[in-house]
Length: 221
Image 1 (cartoon, rainbow, N blue to C red):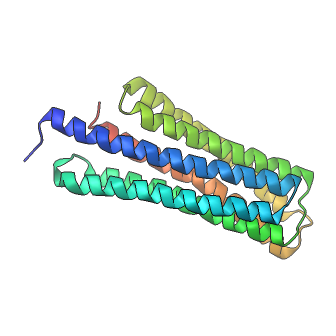
Image 2 (image 1 turned 180 degrees about the vertical axis):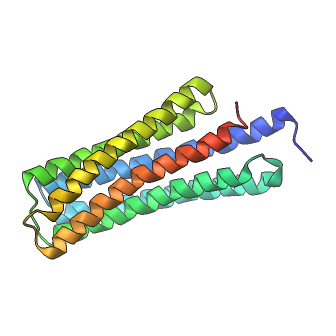
């Protein structure tokens, strides 16, 4: 059994609207990570970092609530929607970015409690990495918005997401070596290295998501 084309498009648009709301919430979560990074670098106020962490936990729950709404919508549609597995993968991958963001926030608080001081070079490179990851996520969101509107814009935003992910990789490789050769003690060194690795992994996740979007786009355009 297949749905009439107009009915399938209606279901698809409804699902995409929810997913677009999900990625918006996840990006808002990630922006709080940048706030945490700046706070750590310029102030290292543990109480402020803990306050931001609590906000991230609340934002994470809100994002997960949206993902549950998407899953419920897809359950209602059932197998009648083409590429249903790709939509499930899309929601799961976006949810994984939220989980990774929460993990970074927890480690930021832990690092601040160690009272470790990073060099100006490391601070600047970490902020650069964080901003590059945000740029990748923003292009991903634009691709999600474009997939229901314009095929050319969609493919352009996919390419831009991949280009920004490559920039993240370049920054990360240089930063990882800088951390390993720094004068940090072993515990804060390992924790700092883990934080930047998780930032880089978020960009990798964004790239995997646009791969999933490519598969979905074959049934949209």
